[in-house]
Amino acid sequence: MIGKDTYLNKLNSVQRKGLAICLNSSGFVEPQVLEVMSGILPLHLRREEISIREVAKIISYTENIPIKRHLVRWSSNPRLESYISHFGMMTTLSDQMKTNHEIDVNNNQPEFYYTTSFRPSRESPEYWKHLGSSKNRTSIQSDRGRDLIRAHLGDISRQSWVAFTDGSCLGNPGPCGAEAVLYRNEASNELKKPVSSRASILLGDLIAIDLVLSEVEASRARPDTIQVFSDSQSAVGLLTLNWKPDSYTNIIKEILSKINRIEKAGIPVKLHWTPGHSDIEGNNIADRLAKEAAAEASQQDNLPAIVTKQDVKRNSRLLINTKWQQCWNEANVGRTYYHLRNSVTEKIDMDKPDKKNFVVLNQLRTGYCLNQYKSKICPNISPLCECGEQETVDHFMMNCTKQHEIREQLRLSIFFNTGITELSKELFLNCNSDNDPYPEYKDRILELFSIFLEKSKRFS
Image (cartoon, rainbow, N blue to C red):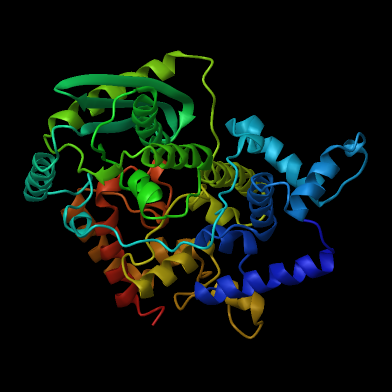
């Protein structure tokens, strides 16, 4: 971000050469094209993204970290606008993210610090490894999970309290709610709370556990144990397996403190993971009410918006991608490639139609191939095709008489496979999914075009 142009230009040169080698492309291709082609950020934008994430990280430090104290002193300077510094550039960029994406790094969660000696993570229970996730769990795994939890519930004494907790988000992140249903002495108690106008579902799961513990602390009863079932492996792992938290450290510390106080009072607290959507009554009730709490959160204007490192990481990349797109739109180089790929975030499968022909396709997209280009690098090479015309990409693909027969074979193959009657350069080289008229045939079109390239023997 800040540095002598001499040094920065050397770094840019290294990135350009490295990308050209990785993409098997000409060393004369503009660096802007190579970066878009590979999906690698320009280095000046990469430095800006790292700066935003770094200032958020510094803000999350405690005051006993020297760089945090330095930032605090710098922020207290009444003439901040009168000079440029590393902190000045970093905070300017973070302010841009706040303006564009409503993410304020000053609301970043504090970093977690162990107050005792290092505690390694413990091994997760064996049954966690065999029940899958909610996205890919089979019916057999769901039945097995339900049976395991029901069997465990059957072993719990009647003098114990049992709670099922859940969190819900309308979007992730989004308006967030928490809910728990607490069973005690044959009675049930529903606890529900809108949590935040903007948070992840993990916060809802943690707050739901906190609701149960707060209810236990407020009660004078003394159950045998407190058995809490959550459908969030992350929440249970953070609280019981010593996983290091990257966010929501305040609520995690508060929950651990409550567990410690309750257990000191002689009431053991047990946290268990239960597979979600496995037809367990308490879990189903918690899931339904958590969604209601999230809906209530979306209607309230006074709830806090909590920022995590993941939020900063995600939205700093969104901001930088916006800048990258603007640079690509306004660049005065690489316009041939821009016409075929105008989005810097467009993902391209580099294995289609295959790795060898993908390299050829990229060469045709940039125009840095064939004799017209080679003659500019080496005057001894003629710019003409064997048919006598200037050998450009358009000529080779659409007009060369030498390729007439195999081009007609390609035309017929395209028609019989897709029904498309007109061939064009854009049909084979276009990478813009937003204006692709035949997205359902894209893979097949590339396969047929690769056959054309191999038969032409032009790139063998």
